[in-house]
Image (cartoon, rainbow, N blue to C red; front, side, top):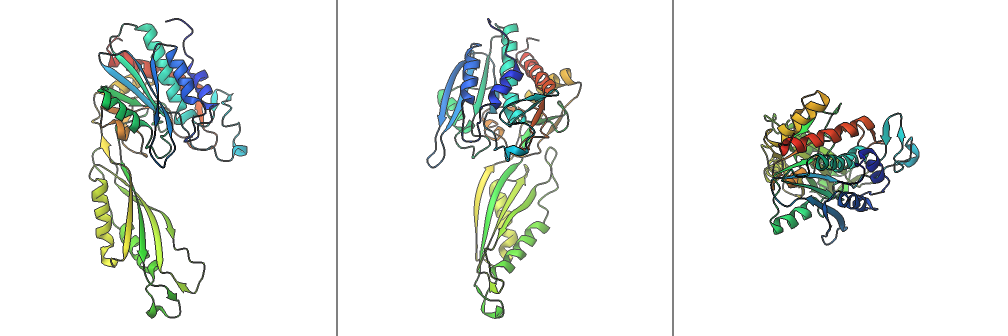
Length: 385
């Protein structure tokens, strides 16, 4: 392979300088397309579309057509930077200060995407005849509604009969130091909007009204006082959190006729979104039936047994960092919730302490170490080490 090896730090900087706040791409997919083509990947830019939602540019890049197939999956979209004046450096300038690269997406997860690319380059230079296939599935929709990204690319692959044998998602899984955590599953997440109806009236004449707020408070108390479960072998206990309560009543002497609350429930493998909704309805039924529940499912819980690909990643991480990662399922959702339906998947990336925060920062040393870990993952998966 001709040309200079890919520098994961420089590539991370190029990606950060693309202001790819969901759903914008701002050239990030193009940067990867150009870079991967340069090392022999066949690249396709796939547009994900759904009526009523922004179109999303995604990338499917593959090297090789046969043998075992290993996929790196990630995203180039980022969350908004917040008040730029409060950053110690421009969040899209990708400055390096005292050995740390500062920028939106440095950790979540342009750094890992750059490490995927550089590791693949290193591996192919050392093992040009490895006999398998390596791919990168990169979306611009992970931080958004996630309807036009990874899930759309997987639909294309399924229609074409392209099989993936194992996948590594580069989300920032590590809690404190590089090498401490691999995620082998995720909790499910469901959002419920509870709307309670009553009869409005004057606060001096409560006998003529039905206070929706009172019944709402009783319902929420019944939900928050109940324990859903105590957790399972690989999952922590399920959790219900009230995120908003809205009565919309500007007057102090008016009994409200309607009250609304939004709930988010993160649930383990004892539940599905359907059984979670049933549990909520059963708990609030004693307080009357004049209510509505709107349900939005972000994802179901899933578990990839902590073997196979997770062990390959753990072995590679331990060889580089000296730490044996823990296998966990905590945190939020990721696109692994779509990928696990197609192949075994595990998540491993950078340290997540600054993701989505002001001054999102990654140590340059961690970027280089992560690249080495990913290269070793490929060597162990294809058994060429």
